[in-house]
Image 1 (cartoon, rainbow, N blue to C red):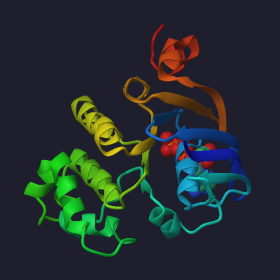
Image 2: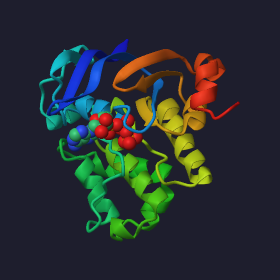
Image 3: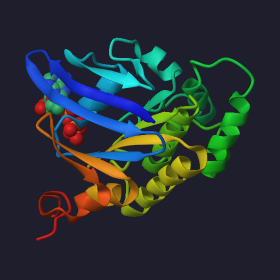
Length: 237
Ligand code: ATP
């Protein structure tokens, strides 16, 4: 089943066209990655899907429902959570309060249970749950941002540069957890990454975005074997 269907999307900043007719799809249960250099339009694409920016043209369907003119909170309530670039945790709130913010579209009893689920993936967050999020390290803030996204009980999670600013070891750890959340909790993932090596060893399929256009698509194996990808994204001679 197709969870996300993006068709011919164009998004502008004033007169600047940042997305030039982007189409892609994500099937249920997949991890899909979008590769692209700085300024290719990756963040713009994530914001457009999450409803933080409105596309000028094209359409976006989530679980068969048009979402391209819906407000971001309505989109979250349908099960699509964005983990933004730079994490954007609330530094003056505690870890527990940050997690509660992730459940803001939901009412009711099982929030406690979901918090325990988040803590089972990220035990360090449980240990530090009463501390301000501003005191966490970069890697722990990334864990908190993912945890906060999980609190929305997403069917689809959008992750914008989860490895940004993290050491190779922490990057491996975060991607390991992304894989486990996909396999164990059935969360479909669409992730943007500059670290092509890690992304192409985690995802099932990928797209390459350049100057606001999708220029290549394939399974991760196909992309890893592509000479262009090896030269421009994997740094091989
Ligand atoms: P990065 O990896 O640096 O985050 P990106 O692939 O996410 O890059 P975007 O941030 O989506 O790229 O930017 C796409 C294009 O839109 C770039 O050319 C950028 O200069 C332009 N752009 C981004 N934000 C704005 C803005 N607020 N106003 C005007 N132009 C913008």
